[in-house]
Image (cartoon, rainbow, N blue to C red):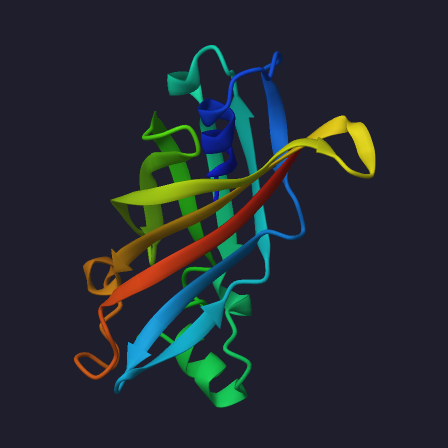
Length: 185
């Protein structure tokens, strides 16, 4: 889920060099799980990923973001165990969720659509996220480094990945929010 930084690069002109980017520690991935009229927020604190971007050939942008399922947390231990269990993420069998970037399409000066593939529980399906730029420019602590930030929103239907625990009381369609901050190396 994360990979959206490439999108900001595609949205704003002026970045002169194609370069690999890395995830900043401020990047977060959360999923809102509907349960009996309320939402339980699941956070994925362990993330990794890289994006290669060439501003002159946005269509050639490539990237991958991985989140560790075994670290998924709600902040409530019994619920965390349930989320990581075989009926939901099956973290023991599938230790990661991977988002592979396929395409970025600019929709306005500060927004884009990000298309890719998510692999969850060994199943790969297409995914689309809407992205909005919130930061783009030199890093405040090091003007030689460039920082790009995006807020991405989308949703996945967990049942299409084989995660059927708790249905119908626990929602199948889950809103995904990614606060993506990336820096040039």
